[in-house]
Length: 95
Length: 493
Image: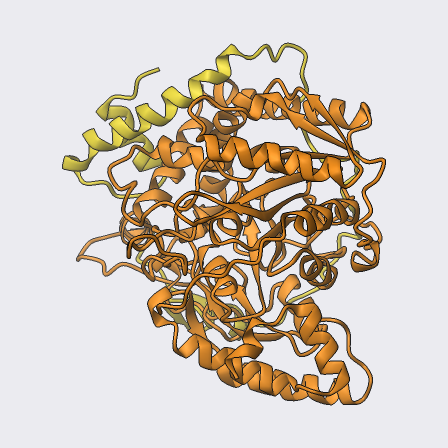
C-alpha cells in the first residue's frame, strides 16, 4: 500500500489538521515509511484468533444508569477559550 | 541541606518517623535543588506553595502518629496527570493555560497518603516520544554526560527520570504506554515500574492510548518502587478498566529470597546489531539471578518481532480517537480565525497550531488505519497479533516461568538532536524490548544493572505475571542487590 499526495490530503482532512500543500509530499513519505513498517503484520497467521480484550478474564464493571455528577457549569466552562452566557462559543455553524 | 534530596523514600520515611528530619526540611531541600537545576529543564511548573503547605500538614500527621509511608515525601508529577488548579498540559501547546478543575485519582491518592507535590515534570508531547524532544517546553537534559555532550534522558517520562536521577525529588510519577517509564529509567540509572494494566486508575491522566497507558513509580530503589506503588494502586469506580482486586503490601513481600524461582530468557530478544555490551550485561544479569538461587531457562516468545508494528497501529489508532477532543472549544488553545472561517477551519487551524509534528503524524496514521476499507487490514489484524503476543507470555508462565529477564533498552542514552535526521521508525526501535509488555498488559520493571564503556548507565528489565507486582519487585530486589549499582552523575547543572 502506497500513500500518494491525494491520500495524505484526505487523511489530514479527516483528522481535522490543516497541512499546507507544500508539506503534503513529505507527509506522504513519512506515512509510507511507517506503513511499510506495519506491513510486516501481514506475515502473521491470525486465522481464528480473537482480538485481546483484557489482561486476565474480567467483566467490565456495571452500575446503575443514573446521574452521579453535575451542576458545575462554571467549572466546566472555566477553561474554555470562549464561553458566553453559560455556553461554549464557536463560530457560526448554520447560515 | 542538599543531602536530604538524595534520600530514598524508605530512608526519608524512617528519619521522618524518628523525628530527625521534617517534611518541611525535605521539601525545602528539594525546592532549592529544583531552583538550581534549570539547565535540566525537568520541572516545568513549580508548586512551592502547595509543596510547603502539604509538608506542614504531613509534619502534623507524623507528629500525631498518623503517617502512611509516603507521608511527607517530596515527589515530582509528570505533566500528563491532571492536578487541580495547577497547569497540566501533557507538554503540548494545545493545552496552553489549561488548569484542571479536578485531580487525577493517582495524584489524589498520593496526596491522601501525605506525599508532597513539588511541581510538574516535563515529558514528550502527549507521551509520544522516546527522547523527550517533542515537548512544547523544550528538551529535557540527562544529568549524565559524556564528553560534555547533552544526552537525552529518554522518553516519554524524561523529566521524571532526569529529576529523580539528579536528586531534585525523592521520586516521581511516570506513565508507560510503550516503554515510557522503563526506557527513561534505564537511560538515567534509576528504577522504573510499569504495573499490570488496570493496577492504577487512569482517571484524570491525559489519555494517549487507553488500552496501553498505565501509571507507575520512578524511584531510586526497588523498595521505593514498592512503597510508592502501594499509594498509587487500587480500584477506582471512575476507571472501568481499573481492577477490582486487593492491593497487597508490596514492601512486605520484599525478602530478596528468590531461591526456587524460574527466570526465563527469551531468545527472540537477541536482536541483530545489538551492542555486545547489552548482551554481556544481560548474561551477567542471568548469572546474578542464578547465583541468588533462581533457575534460569531459555524460553521462546515467537511473536516478539511483530510487537512494534502492532503497537504502531494500535497506539496511533487510539490516539487519533482520544486526541479528537482537542478542538479549541472546551479548553486550551484556539487559533485566531480569519473573516468567514467556520468551525471546520477553527478545528483545522487550532489542531495544526496546537500539536507538534510527532503528535500530528501519529494522529494521522491512526486516522488512516481506522478509515473505511483499512480497519480490518490494519487495526483488527494488529489487535489479533496482540492476542498472539499475549499468548506467547501466557505459555511461558504456564510452563512455570516466574519472571522474564531482558535488556531494558537497545543502547545507552544517545545525544539530544542525534536522531533528528532519522526516520520516525528508527526512533520507535527504542521501545523494542518494552512494548511487548504493554501489549500483553503485564507488569515490567527496569533496574539499573551496569555501565557501558562511556560510563553511562544501562538497565535490565524483568517482566512478571499479571497482578504479581509483589513477586516481580522481589526478584528485582535480588537483581538490584547483586548488581550493586550505586553510581551517580557528576553534578554540572
